[in-house]
Length: 252
Image (tube, rainbow, N blue to C red; front, side, top):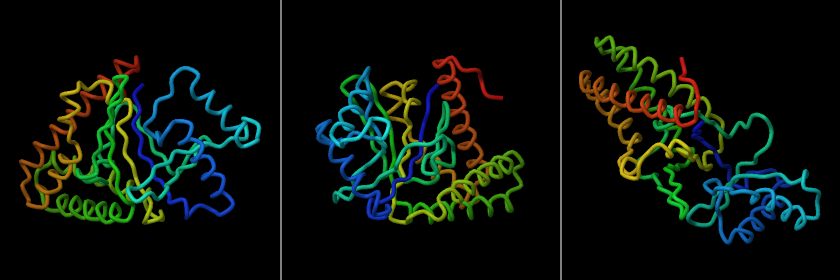
């Protein structure tokens, strides 16, 4: 099973004060232990995670079960952003099996793209953006889709647009009430395992989704339908490749 994720990170200053010192201590040790920030793009091998948990528990003077983990990132100006982990469901994390949903791409700009290449042959694509601009972007996308649904007489496109609008609306709802200065990070994760290095470099779904919205705004229904159909076929092909690689049954 290949899994992609969408994670919201809150600035450490927005975390309750009684939690803040713990996360600073955790992150300081993590960066010293690994020689720099790795999460959430690091990969644990063998007993590495267990060894880290034992080491940080010893450092903090607590039993290992008491150690709480988090994902964290630093902005270019050094500000810390955290996403605490734990519990069956995390309100700051969305995940998807064997694909990346259309509406996730609608939240990002191509300028936020980053490629990660490891020495072990693992590669990934991720995008980041601030939460505030994302809300504005999703609102504009929802307006574009709603207007297109009302105007177009292309029945197949209308069905696609209706489905897209539902996804974008759900995405906007998920982002609502978040700290505007927080960060959102989309990580293709294991989906990249079925992409060759060449296709990894050519993968531009964020650009394609932006193009779909642009064509809809211009009222170019035929072109909108064609690029949308290619987009969804591409991701259906990738989903099937991921499912086959992981031994999963096709989704119905």
